[in-house]
Length: 305
Image (tube, rainbow, N blue to C red; front, side, top):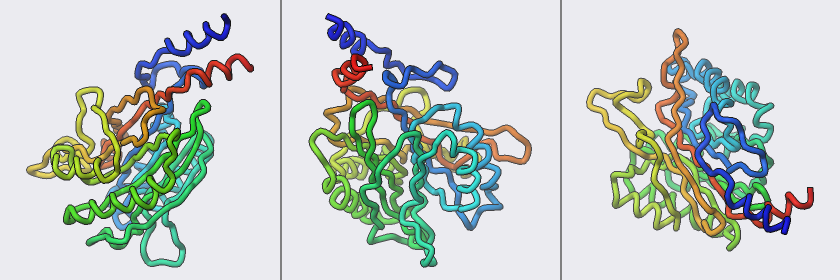
């Protein structure tokens, strides 16, 4: 009878979306909260774009949102990373990357840097075979890690696809991600969460659907009024005279049988201090609140306490 009551209580747990001001739920009843965000820390524009000041502001503000895992893209600037690392190491003791880093190459790393409150195990990282233009000077690719949340094993992939190039290059990079990482490490009972800046617009339905097909992944709708992650109209770091708004950053899922629900929303941080851009990156982030369907294992863990 006690066991049944516990199972019922778990199944009726509140799964509403928390805000930065809300009280955190107990660890064993809380969803896994993931943020992916291109933070625009380009090394050759460090002073122009005030990378170090923006990094300090990001570190100060981001802890209030209580994300469990943060997947940064364009974390190229080592000085900005040093600031973020120093200020966030207590909240996020587990840091991975930047992926494809090398001290013996004239190319910079991939810019993919993952911070986590829980330990993760790196399975593998890849460097894309084909890159074009300015992207050829970065060792762009993807990294796959594995972790456990409330008894449920999951895999997390971070990536950043080619910008401003023929669509065929991004398609090839999606194939590499799928064949060299996702399919290689796929297991029936383990969901795979795929995060990053894909540089493929949601409104471009041909290439967007091709991306999902190649990755064999699923997306979902965004909650709230904000429906774009790259804003050339209102974002001061991305503004253009005849700009537009687009969605090019995603948190996708593969093998989602163990995921009961996933809620996504656009994540925006701004700063109002003097001499700092009000926008802290040219991209907005994407947050996901992942509810795993493992209530029975949770109930057993509560009984054994």
